[in-house]
Image 1 (spheres, helix red, strand yellow):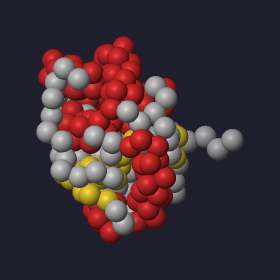
Image 2 (cartoon, helix red, strand yellow; image 1 turned 90 degrees about the horizontal axis):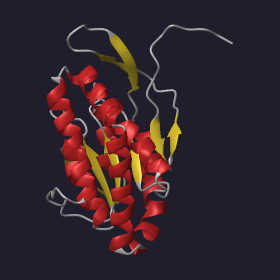
Image 3 (cartoon, rainbow, N blue to C red; image 1 turned 180 degrees about the vertical axis):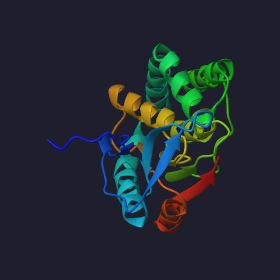
Length: 210
């Protein structure tokens, strides 16, 4: 087996599974304080965006047909799982953003509250497939502020995180898999402008920016 010391690439999350792709380029994920390269983010484009959107469209009818109470119960299950890994998620946020530990812990706590329904957020004014583009301010919470109300309303989401801080939201996608989320309901697409353009061009996607 070929041995390498190169930082690991963060997979996409499509159709309920980690999805590896040979992207044309990668973004280094660095600790902003030490400048250490921690991981690499694949810079995907239209092909990967289309694959994520197709999986989302396929999942939409079943998810939308679920009673709101069933959708809420699955989100609560993810929130409870997140609470069990709060320290791990806070560490990922600290590593990739340079935030203070207490600030990262507060972000995770608010994310748990949002998933469990004790913290409310405004819903995107769209149903169907919702694309969400992340920022550098709160790489977990700001994405969930849009994703959770959309999911509760019966939409499915394709999330494009900031390529410099992708790990917390990808780890959350893994938790959705453990909590019986149907494949295609919660997807992660990595990349920069080409990935956003791919979502923008895909049919039936309402795009929002966190």
